[in-house]
Length: 109
Image (cartoon, rainbow, N blue to C red):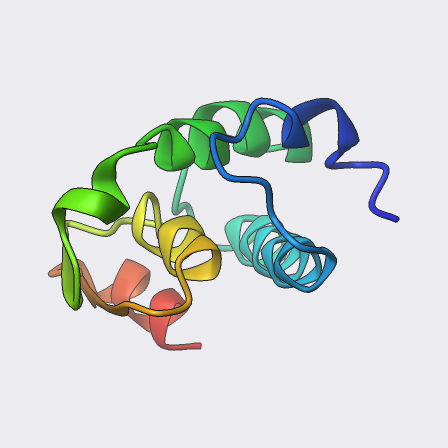
């Protein structure tokens, strides 16, 4: 259903549902659009964001078993690893903490 993700979905330790994939693509599309006028990340295309952002964020197969409840992403930047982890783990409460205003503004949007 999401050809952009297909080459990468097999690498995720816990596969994303179609709904999670749609939310992830919506986030990445918004990030790329925002990044055109405000520098949030050096990653400028979907493939690089998927490999260096999403895959790196989701390569914590045992994290969910060790940490339950509330998670805190300190220094969230453009949202990695917090947003992909929140999309994947819908039963945890994720808080993003970012001191740089331009990045925090994006995360709020």
